[in-house]
Image (cartoon, one colour):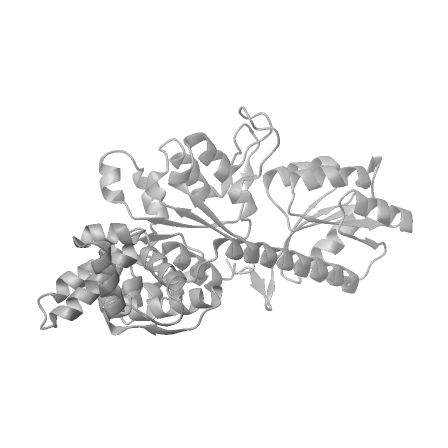
Length: 452
């Protein structure tokens, strides 16, 4: 589904007015501009609809027969926290406007209104919601404080994965990302969201192994007050919070069997119930999942539902481990070095050939996540200029030195590299001397000789 029209996001709008003509007029006005409209005549209908789905905007009549729209504002705001409420009134005054704002309304327009007035307030509040989403996304990015992995690669498997991801992004189909931990599945999921028509909407992330069974179900589907011990207030859950956008479920293979039917139902019908609630909710959310596990084996062992697997695996994208793409290491490492250099207010010329050789020959069991940590460490330890092999972790540097022993290198070079690696990987010179099998005075002389 395309959530953009003429470059602007489609909004989900609820109209609450007891006059049928007003409901029809607003619906036509909004629908001709591409928005999805639900119209109800009273408070009961409004609460029923906000109990089923989330709305971007709610146009609310100030007087609903014998009911007060002002009294309904905080109730609707609690039922649909992400909604912007616009009061419709034929009795405009400064007092009612101020009171409406105090109770949670974002704006108001007076009856009779023109299509231009409706479009103006709709666009203004849409821009406000877009700005709020961007601020939230920026805060999340600042909280992570890590460089985005680049997917620029000449490796055929990566090229195929990117081509498939870009083709699949606009479709809205469920995507399953497969690959070892640290290969960039979360970053690719975020990129797919950015390439889709949902890019202006929320991108939610849930790590399935990080939460207990009960908390994971509540995190996904939300809960109502009193649903379990500690549930002191309603929580909408990640599905509701990602309305119109994308929800990324990491390590889906760890999703408990008891929750799997609920996720399957949501994928099939876009319906769910929060924990402790009997009311059915609806949501328009795209699901992207990822795993490094063998889901086929999990299905054979009865730990993962076969029907859920096929619902999730509409499009499968595989990311290879970093050990299979050593030619990409140089570009990735240099990009990360520039990032961490700027973060630490340093300017680096780059890595030495020995350091690049060490990184390219390393097997990277932690993949790009491990590479990121290695580069960040080097950027902290190195003052400026070239980053040498001595600033790499001991195990990584040692593997390169061991591999280099068979090369026709002078013994002094091998000794220097080995001492640099050991000194860099230990907490004190005493520890380094102990590992090298020499006394501290000898180590001091050798460090002075090699300029370590």
